[in-house]
Amino acid sequence: MSLLVMGISHHSAPIEVLEQVAAIDAEETLPVLGAGDAVGEVLLLSTCNRIEVYTEVSRFHAAVESLTAVLAKHAGLAADQLSKHLYVHYEDAAVRHAFRVASGLDSMVVGDEQILGQFREAFKVAVDQGQAGRSLHELAQNALRVGKRVHSDTGIGRHGASVVEVALSEAGRHHGTLAGRRVVIIGSGAMSSLAASVASAAGAGVTIVGRTAASVHRLAQAVNGHGVQLVDLDAHLRHADVVVSATGATGLLITKEHLQRVLGDDRPDVYVCDLALPHDTDPRIAEIPGVQRLDLSGIAALPQAQIAGESVTTAESIVLEATAEFLQRQMGAKVEPVVVALRSRAEAVVEEELQRLRLRNPDLSEEQFAEIARGMRRVVATLLHTPTVRMKELAGDPGGDRYAAALHALFDLDPAAVTALTENPGGSPRA
Image (cartoon, rainbow, N blue to C red; front, top):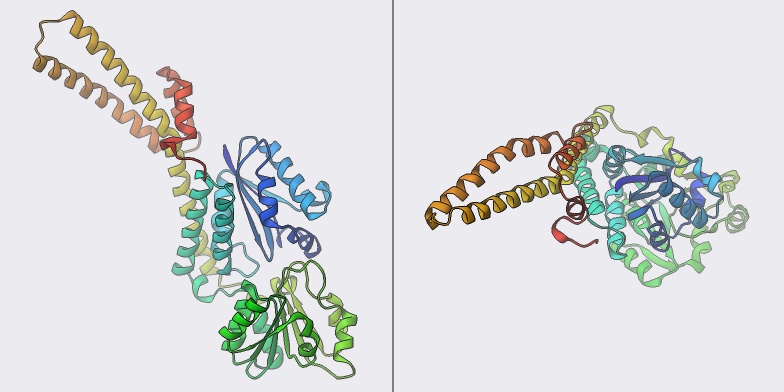
């Protein structure tokens, strides 16, 4: 089984394709992705600008076809429409990609720390659904550790901003400041919560609008704002200076005609930040005089979405180092069953010879027999020590698995025993 990552993001697809894929229900799709014959463990990461499947596969091409078909079906696209926008990373490249994603190096806003929480939540869902086992547990936990290290040890952690922070910074620049401005936030999820905190900290008056009264009022209370129901949206849009929309709705919440009707004949000055995928607002609202609109594709093009090159270089070095260490450990773990089988084989040979020795030399005392047994075991342990240690050391090198294969063949090890140890070392169950 090998690690594979398949995904679509702002790097590989236009926003309109991303919008369709973003409509995928992650919890509903996850078990279907894991049902493919060539697919083992599976984790589905869904953010505002990417959908990625992290999985362990037995056959590369069969897995790619299976995953593509599931994603396309749940996104309402033909497989060939989706496949041209997909990217695939395999084995070593899959590990490096996972570490870069968790570090914010592959984000729309480089250094975005939100991805750590999103990665952690995706792993939790996979575990809860019984789709993540030993391999993805190790990958996810290491990715989260690498992400934390990158943010704490480099300039990314100090200067990296989130999509929300960049959007509100632009809104503040448009109005001169957010202090004293009326900010209407549609939605009460993670991005809306961050938007509310950032706007409130900047001195804006915050109104949270949403469908669920309890979560709306809870968020409003946390930022000393107001919470209202979605049916009251129009009344608050009419007086808003900034509108931030980040819901999970599949249709438009605000159309051009709708907003024109709400604003009436007034000459507005409204800055709309649409952070949802799919869009919450009609792109045509930017045609209304006095209305500015910024969405995810616009944010990606902003200079402040990037950070200092030196910080990125340092972060990339950390990722490369962590990737090499992870792969070294993985290869060591893969050859360990061969080492165990080899030692078991040697012990069995020693025991057979000791039994023959006892039968042929019945006059040996227990003390004499024990001393001979200790000597034989010392000789075997000494002979096996160097090749087994070297095999583990060389396992991470290109073609390192050949050393394990050579020992397997030279010492006629039991294939069934080695396979059992490889698939289930320690007897730990999946998930």
